[in-house]
Length: 115
Image (cartoon, rainbow, N blue to C red):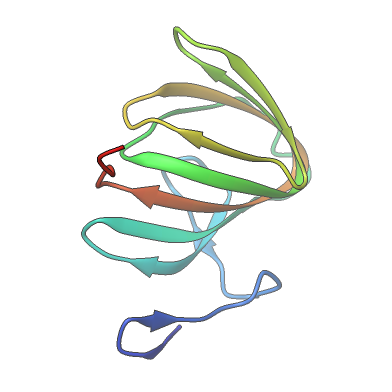
């Protein structure tokens, strides 16, 4: 997917998926580096078990299909559907309840901007 040095291109409709052992489902990695990783995750129908995941970096996501109820330990519960975006802090302990099929675009960013 790296078409030119540092330039990555793919499609939401890709058929190139690999198992995601951390959270189940499948993932399609667009790019991966020291400070940022981006890609797609999908969960087919029937994968309705809660997913517990502690974020290794800030995660910003866009729901493309389905619905997610994300419980954040010590924080709010988010309800996100297709077209909704969220950004969660590094270290957040989350429990995801998905309505499948579910697909999201995500970006994990290790470095934080000084804002």
